[in-house]
Length: 122
Length: 222
Image 1 (cartoon, rainbow over the protein chains, first blue to last red):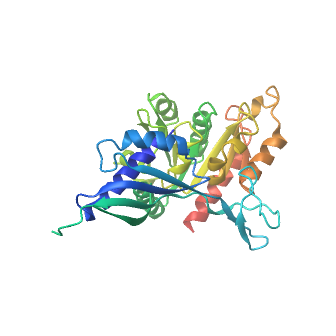
Image 2: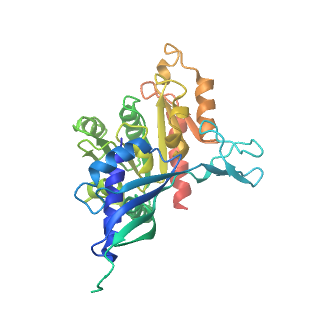
Image 3: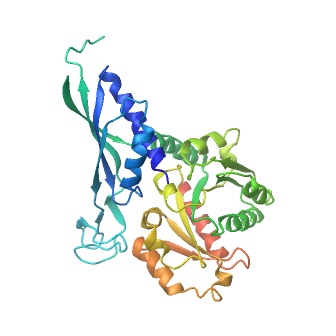
């Protein structure tokens, strides 16, 4: 499974964005993961603890929001949420629809950080 | 201490995606059609690619291949017998190829002197689906020995594919392969996808596959 690679990438990009907040500690990391992203939340949670050891993310919570799969239908022009990942059909008119608009997301939405009150800007 | 929320809205695989975009531009400028072949271990990617390389070379096309495996250069040696330039990428435990690995293994190759470049991914139907390698065409392969419901079990990969190849058609009958069910399942996940029913052993279906490659190549260049 590639969840460890994914978590390592999360730790890297979050650490980079912390450069703007010296001395800050990460409390929570919020992800948006598409239902079609082939990533398993349990594995993410398991790897997160390991991969964040010794980083500014150590001890933080990982919160995962699953984004449902939506498809755009060429036949009726509508867009809707897929009822089953086993059948890519328009939920409105039932025609085959493979134009996926949402559900592949692999994104760090936001982080909650704790910072020293008297921040000194260099 | 004060807490605050910092909005990031950042792609987790941003670095890979950026590298892949760079590669795609490079491939397109060089006029080489790049394909990423993905399947389970044992589907017959290497045998299918051996035959593809051989036939393309016979037809006068300039071809090359990168082949990903956790360990060994066995597949690269098999493919090199076709006479095409081949390089092995050993991932040493990583279950998929990443754009950075592809970029690193292209060093010294003149892309403009190639018509087709095939990237044989690590045998795995899950992890490679998240990693863009800069390819134009992603090919999902499925053999007649694997069970017709594989596309339903691995929708992420089959949905992200541009073409599907069924391999080992020569043993479809003894395996009790339900062709109709397989086609129906692939279409359920990726409606309208081009499907090729092939055998690297007998050559069944290779002509249609080679025609498709030529069409893609011509279409992309125009």
